[in-house]
Length: 226
Image 1 (cartoon, rainbow, N blue to C red):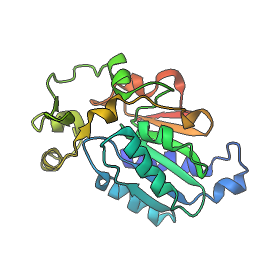
Image 2: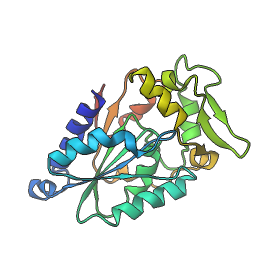
Image 3: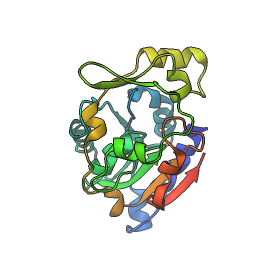
């Protein structure tokens, strides 16, 4: 279902004229996706395949999760390779990344998928603490000695992949990508969503981000509940 709604939202982003003409919006054929923390971009294979079949050129960024600056740079590096206007999609922590990277000139619009959508000066930690996840399992988020965060493999299926088959969720737990403290504590700069069209998918039963945080202040131009 998430994939179906993402396709619908991406389609709206690609078709909407916004401040451009409808003809100009129709020229948008590039989609760049920034994954969230604790996973890599391979989880977006189904979405990439579906959009590719519809004629879009899809690139999934493999940002390193070593710092917010590094991840923004990784997305900008990919955006620079696009051959025209691009819709930029961010999932979860990826919302922090596209909020900054989306200021690149060739980004035509942003799509937030169950994602953080910071304003200037806000960090992921600050946002998460402002509206904690209801009934989140204590001790689920752990840290290594060198301050990289990861999810307890035992809690991972419930917190991160509750709608997946058990075997798939357990594999994701064993292959998760650790995220640096810097990535979660760095404050956001000027947000692209203030100057460009944006859409948001709100996961109403999200166990990683409080759904109220995903829809807070109605910042995204349009929101869709899942």
